Length: 155
Image 1 (tube, rainbow, N blue to C red):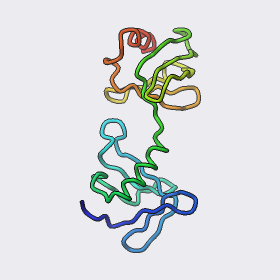
Image 2 (cartoon, helix red, strand yellow; image 1 turned 120 degrees about the horizontal axis):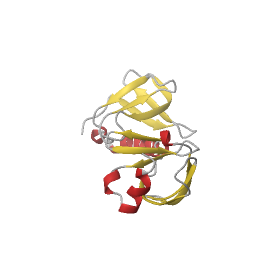
Image 3 (tube, one colour; image 1 turned 180 degrees about the vertical axis):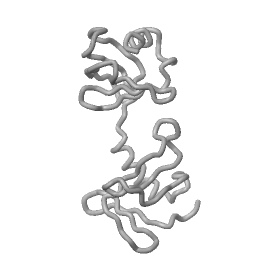
Image 4 (tube, rainbow, N blue to C red; image 1 turned 30 degrees about the horizontal axis):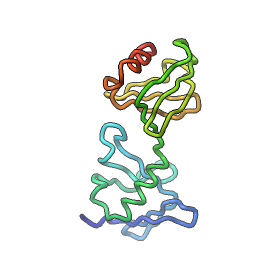
């Protein structure tokens, strides 16, 4: 494990504060993964509130435990994306449609406004509900037969 040339800490408001080796400090720093779906454990940037990259971290797993913990907590808050494991039912095959799904966080219902809210990102599907929450279908081919049949009607 190598020592990074920066330090991370939380300020009094719970936001991340970055201190560079030069002593320069940046408040309200946000970690952003380079490839959140295809390679979530590789490469991330620490950016300022305007989105300017301050630090590139090629191997987050090589960071000291405390910095890695702060980044992991911040990413968990930022990347809330339930993973759909089963489509239980859809209200209609026309849109808008109410979907009832089983996710890794439990059963939920959401409204799909249109087919265009289902996007492919490599081998995965991203489904956006009417409130902008993104749901992930990591491997559409691994869904059960009933779920695939429902999903195919919208693709």
